[in-house]
Length: 234
Image 1 (cartoon, rainbow, N blue to C red):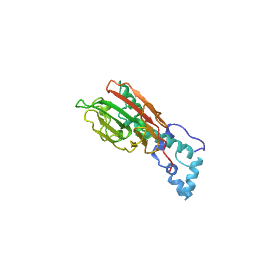
Image 2: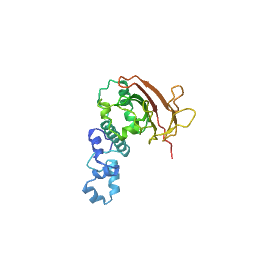
Image 3: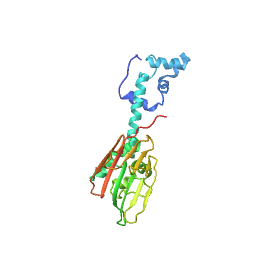
Image 4: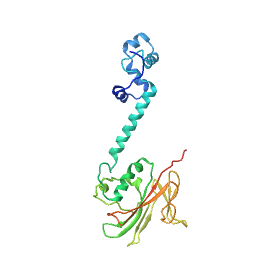
């Protein structure tokens, strides 16, 4: 076999079977090579140089590149399979906004807070702030994207208020700490980068945060607060 570079489908397909570059080289070594050489490391070196082996030459850098591409594709495919919004034709602006943010909230790059004001099943007006990322990981969102259920705030969310019964509740989530005793009003501190998000429409939202009011045919009022997380180094 002549020494040189390699390319093509045969090489790309072959790396999927091997965990390491050494495993790949070992697969190219024949029993006869080991019999005469009596040195596994030397046999690997000769395969890498293209002087021995039963397959195509593939340098370590190319092997690692192909393995990285394979892993990226695998993760991408897995993410697409887990997206509750994948493949759905959504008409409402709010559901479209949730779909646009779903992947980023699942992988931790974004931590979106959703404000919703609407009526519950009993016709009572309720409102509250929802940690979207936490809800995505703790329940099935397929019924929301398919229109079978409405996403509504609960007493277990970041905040909840029933305008008719005057029931109030607030609770920290894995992504946010609720700050209530301050002159600026209700604030949320991100648990990962400790940046504070301000939900007051008259004030700046905060570092790496944006406020978006949405018109929805399904809800009385919807506001989305997007925060891009910058995780702190230990």
